[in-house]
Amino acid sequence: MPLKLSAYLGMEFDMGHILAWVIPILIVVLILLVIAANIKVVQQSKAMVVERLGAFHAVWGVGLHLKIPFIERIAKTISLKEQVVDFAPQPVITKDNVTMQIDTVIYFQITDPKLYTYGVEQPMSAIENLTATTLRNIIGDLELDQSLTSRDHINTQMRAILDEATDPWGIKVNRVELKNIMPPKDIQDSMEKQMRAERERREAILQAEGQKQSQILVAEGEKQSAILRADAAKQAAILEAEGKAQAILKVQQATADALKLLNEAAPNDQVVKLKALEAFQAAADGRATKIIIPSEIQGLAGLCAAAKSVFDSVEPNKPAGKPANPPAAKL
Image 1 (cartoon, one colour):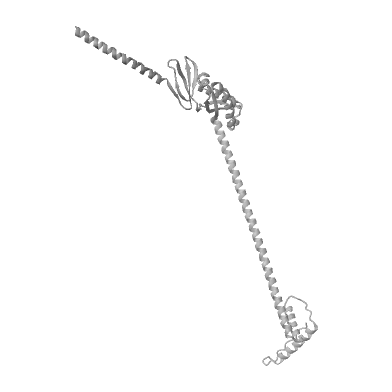
Image 2: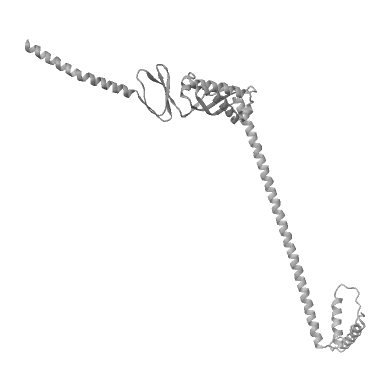
């Protein structure tokens, strides 16, 4: 018995000694785990809304933060980047009672995490409903044609209204875009026919303009061709006239040279009269009906006629019965 009791007391002493070391270690490890679990690192373009005992405490920015366990909690982690939300098509009615489907795209950014967290319940749903009502109000003041051609005006007006309405929620609306505007099927068909007719009209105008330009170019070409032909005829006439002038000048020069040589030869009166007779003979071959001959040349002509008659009378082979040549005609 004494041996068993001593052994039991020894084991109990060893267990107590072990527990004395293990329990503090476990406590330290547990504390370290709790501390590690409550160390928070906020990344760039992020923000954390912290509550203490259920009330707003602070907004943590970028960096390392330590949360008090069981007293503080992270209410919401918010992205500060610009976000894009594409809303489903909304039915809207224009001023001329045409129902269209329009879907919008919103570009927004959270500027105040506290207001975004506590300002409104379900901010995305609130923005979607606000966008739909604003779009209906704007389109309701426009007719169909205006709503199809005034995208920039509608986008600007919607952005201003939404940005002002979302300020209490800590949201800034940067841009609003109308993604698609879908009129009814019958109106789409009418618009397609109208656009087709407009394209055909423009095509006809372009073809007419092309033909007009072509005719203008052809006329210009004919005009230039006529001008060139006239210039060519003018140059040809000028060259022909110059050629005739040169020919006349050459003839006159030759005549002057002949007279000069004749004058240098010192001819007698008979030679001069003979040359004058040759000149009048050449003139007589023309179309002149009357020729006035000087008296000196008339005497020379009579002398030539008498000599010719003498020579004819003494020709040996001439028949006897044939009459002699008639005398030269009187000039």
